[in-house]
Length: 218
Length: 233
Image (cartoon, rainbow over all chains, first blue to last red; front, side, top):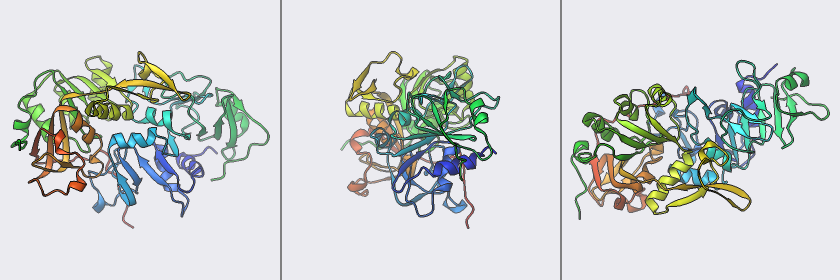
């Protein structure tokens, strides 16, 4: 059936490649760190100023002066580097980070993303998301296919305030893996036991289905 | 040599007036100038414009200044984790300017480095870009953003010396180095203040030229927002 958030994270981990520098957003993207293939050298960038983010600390290792962008306590690894926020975003803006994985409230069929504000209801701010989506070479969105009340989050046009235009390359949801093509969402894979019709019904934007669609293998 | 060393936060912050524009270092509660914030709370300075990546939490950091209604305007990138902030914002009591985090960092850096404006792609095509000049370079659209400066920059470092040189620890560095350069008066509080000559010149993060006042802070709480641990196995 539909993937849980760990399943989504596992599937995204398959997009990682040897030597990648990767920025993981808050939420499901953070879980991707747990599924980096054994032996693969991937360096995690945390935009508050850490390259080479290690696992959560043990009780004894906890250091209030060492956190990630989600304000969680973390550790460093051999080869880690620490720097200022200006330096951190120079890396991001300068396209030195290979892959950005982040959550979204909505994605449009052109790859626009909305994830920072619901007018009149919720304003948390964009944090580093606007900088990341404006400059990342490759952006993968991790999210549920529909909202809690069943509304599609893969839309013709975003209804919420935009975070960035035409930037998302790939989307991994609980139901499917999709590529953003400019003409619509190309269905690449479907969650085990989920039909193309179910995905079609949950996708408001144009869904491109060509040939047999394989199941996600996680 | 000018004496930059002051006794405590009360001396360091004695002339911050109502209506001042402040920069406050820190990311979340990591690396915030705890002593200076406490002093601003004690003095009840009002109508402040605060430039800081976050706004603290409800009961710590800048969050406490919001509780006491000392802040007129916040300039930040992310203000989640703070219910009172969200309430004041949605009710219109608090003026808020939300800025992409990298743009915020670079605007502060530019302020300290004498660069009045620069172009960045962050926020193009969003409401952040409304009313701003945009321009195409090499086929991509960019927004013009201007420098930020402050009357007082309040920063926190791990070690400092009497010449005002600073060294930060871990990710408590974050916005502190840029803010130190962008204050007309930069007040640095440090966990350990040593005589000049004791810090290795190769290891200095913020050269003393940027720092006007320095003091050794006390009673650091260093509150952790998300204490996340793994089991030792």
